[in-house]
Length: 151
Image (cartoon, rainbow, N blue to C red; front, side):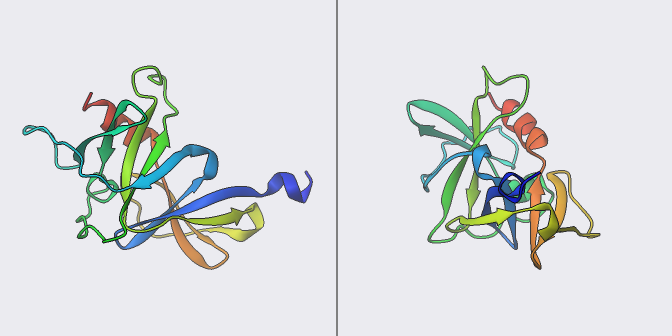
């Protein structure tokens, strides 16, 4: 495989106390923060619904879904709209998570990634170090299941 093929354009998405690492293609768009509209009886990890490009998108708190305490919303918070990957794509084409800042582009290749031995939560697929910088690869299927449960 050539070097150009082995590099994946990715995004660091800052959340409370850590950063998520996702391939660019999994993030549909990052938009300015808007307050999600929440129903009364919804679980704590479900922050509510936001309107994006004419459709309603469920917003999940990554931190709470992962058993952590959510931090205070940063002044430069954003909403990252994530492409769904599961079998229910027609019902849930997208869901969103709140970031605690502006995402940052990063080029990732296998030779830059080292797996961490840190304890993972339910919303984590892997904890890695990319060129010495720690990041969490989120369990998109798990987050998607949580979001789907709110539709």
